[in-house]
Image (cartoon, rainbow, N blue to C red; front, top):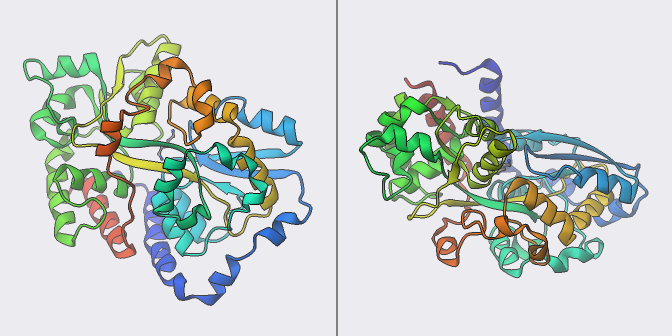
Length: 387
Ligand code: N2P
């Protein structure tokens, strides 16, 4: 209903683009194009670095300090969905030297020949990375060849504690946090203070499948249909679909329940205090587990400044640089050496740095095939329009 034409075009780009990626494994031209790396990286480069990262995902001085340290000028753009970044990557002319896809999308992009290999001789700060996270990453990027984790977190439910209690009235909080966004008994009451969902097909269907107890990444078409049917029951209660905008919507009290990213919910709480709005926002840790994601730095195949990209990656892996990002955006990082520089309240926040028990319950990142992604996009469009 309220789908704009540009969103429609983006949807089409994703659908056709995924088909391209799925074919390119056997495409020799693409494989050749993906090769350049060490040779290109040793040529002199102009002092420019083009970065494309998620919104609200960096400390205020991260870029300025890098520019001071290296004399390299950074151009920094932001996005708020993997679908948007993916559409740019498959067009093969990104204009960026660093991009930050979720590791599961990055797996498709690696297979499609869309990234350059890392030159680890240029990354001495690699030693600071947590071996456990590297192992997890190697599930999708064997040998840790293309990707470095930027930050990680999980998809879950975020609430404005006071507004939710008021809207639920006599109904106690559910045992399973996912009920707050997927069970009409709760959504019909929470509708009054505002429910928002992430605006991407993959994130919405992954959570819906998880709630139904289905496999999150390998569902059959019938599973996706079941998820769609369940989603349609709560559709009338959803006020909006937005991703990056959830932070300000929660912080200002515009909405009271969100399906989104745990890190952003903690950031919303912090922002509401900074803005003197004093909303009590919490990221809930569902007892059935959240959906883990790792956002990863990678160098696109068309990057003109791969050497500068390596300088950036190595700079980010300095413990104090990473810790400053975590302290600003309230996301967990992959840098073991950074932990001592993370603020105590963030280090002890059990919805940011999860307990071992909660980590064990997370659904690890996985990948859908191109056909499944097209099916999700089709069903999501129907779900969002509500007809
Ligand atoms: C940062 C949001 C990134 C999380 N604000 C989703 N990949």
